[in-house]
Length: 318
Image 1 (tube, rainbow, N blue to C red):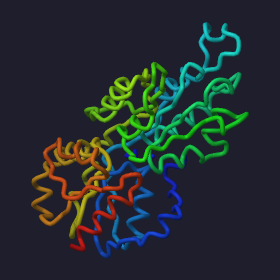
Image 2 (cartoon, rainbow, N blue to C red):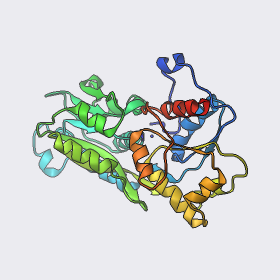
Image 3 (cartoon, one colour):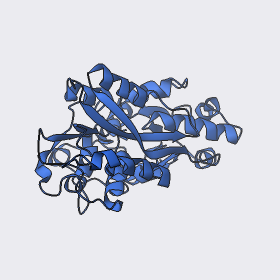
């Protein structure tokens, strides 16, 4: 998911997005299980295409006191580190790797709320790399001050921003190249009340296979929102043209919600037999299918939600 500062604020359209003709979804009712803090952006994009959005959030994502404490532990020097003259909190790391927008905003929050005796990064050695997926990279520059400024107030340009051409965790690993034993800090979710999808464990394993020492830190929590999450879908009286999944955890959350009210996926398909199932990129599609659901449409461009909506538009035009 592309996965998420200013999470609930719509991302500004890039020049390329403004120039590209927007494929329409007129009078289509589109459900989506995206967490509430991502839903505003997806709702806006659907409305621009003439669709009727139906938010069905099945999971929540956001920082907690526990995850903020975990992040602070990497921002505050230990006693042994303090004894090393000139040592700064993140000097043992060569990179930060974000797999979601929520990870970025949570790390920014921890940085802004933690009274640091000195900036986390020094201006010596090779530049520090911060990596993010697709349009999530916009969040690195947002806020006052931005995450990049918080990391290195004296010279934010010392931080190199890396955005992989393919907006997947695997694409991020490829863009990093060989780590040669260097350390990368990975702020990732702590999954609560759901099975952890294999996306993050595989990402960390791939980094290790590429010569990096991947250090995992829980930056925020991914939680099931509860047994009422499917109510808006079950109580819908009228057509439903499509449902969009933007992460694997959303699927498990929906199935748990359906089960809580005596429904299952088969009943959903019986209720709306022509409903199209769409996935935001191949990673999400694989996760959806792992629960036994058939995916009809996969967004080929998954650096933003526009990709899956373009794919849906083409599906309905055929």
